[in-house]
Length: 147
Image (cartoon, rainbow, N blue to C red; front, side, top):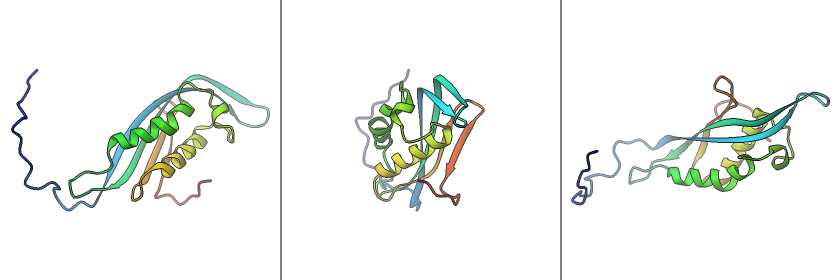
């Protein structure tokens, strides 16, 4: 492995390159949960140790130093407010107001991030995959209302 001496690195001539005002920052998360999904009042399916994969795209302004929202800030939102209610949980007990379908979980995730993102940052897209072949997508360009 090659190591370079970075002790002599100088400040850049410019911090921000180009005229880009906003950029989309993408983060990925995974969680495993148990849940019961109801298809109607009498039919349901139990999912045990079900693995979900979350992808979230956040539109963020680029500041004078060429930085958008820090990935650590997005991680903090996820790990402080979202992860404890999902990972390793029976999510019917933590998201008690809803049928725990991928569609409903995705809407709940959107609302959690929206509530905790700093001002000026917006979710543009959220994808929640139940399997490698199946996912649901919420996109800010679509005209629909969330609860």
